[in-house]
Length: 444
Image (cartoon, rainbow, N blue to C red; front, side, top):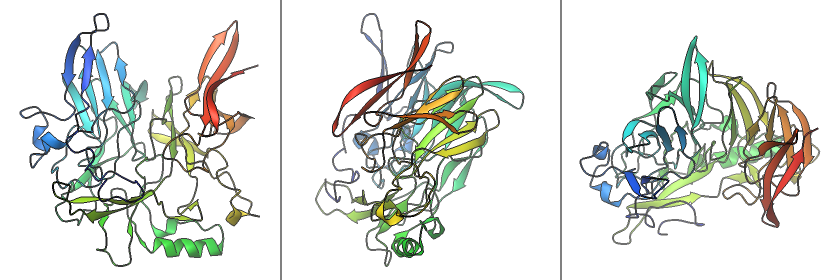
């Protein structure tokens, strides 16, 4: 891929002109195609004017990576959509680029758009909307709302009336830093939700770097000095244009704060449990000289700016955040897993759990929240950030009430079922050196 190093990122050259990943509805009895929704509008369709410069024809690689949700009563299906082609340079695709980075509600019978909301305009950070839309009833200011809750890689949990698409709490278009890369035209504003506040770190300053010891802090500050730091939506820089800087330190990174694993909703209490990780990236753009290619390609990405393998920013690096969706307020936050607290630089330090930057999925029950620590088989997560411990948290307080060791790390969400009056928890495990298997645990 032209313009990349270490196999990192999407310079756009590999995916430009690829087939659009449209959403299709089929008759389940006959297999007949009933309708097609164009995730990138065709000429004359709603949203086509958000793709400038003739970019509609060459902007495939946009689709729904994860999970759709449906409301049988309304007859709606909710589709979360990913970033557009070339996620870090968008000079070839001026405009907001609908329906990228959006939640779209479709009429399940016809495929017609009922409503949509775009979480990121003209994405240049790969902030896909990848997790499953969660449906649940909440009660806000005395009013019952049938809501759809959509976690984003940005660490916002966007919440809408699932019938109308109206935000439950105000969302404001806020001015954000602008790109200085020639040819790029970033959106002047991005939507910032007032409630609930972010469930993980957004943006970074030098004050956020690790300081476990004076030596570690000194090294971290020196490394931070080589990076462009700023708030959420700080754009990648062009390589060599900012003296002494190797790139933009982006938090959340391309794998997000939230991802496919984020979210379990408790219908009894109205609490949403957001599982997230802090995995920053360093991005810069380099000019491409080959003919018929993009103007700029990604450089960097996977070198995450670390101190001997320790993340540059303070922990927790993997966390669980309980959010009262009736009030839009955080209830508690707990680090999930000890993290790399056995690192040689941390030897002799009495540290709390640091959290694993991985993607374990949760299961909420009547009184407990079950979750593992992820696996080294989960792509895009550091090889040291996983574990074999499987825990039950008190869902009201975040306290660990039980834990056990599994044969390997967790690779999927736990499930529960009853058999002959006994409750079981089943979880998928596996790893780079362990075969995939299911482990069943019986509750007393």
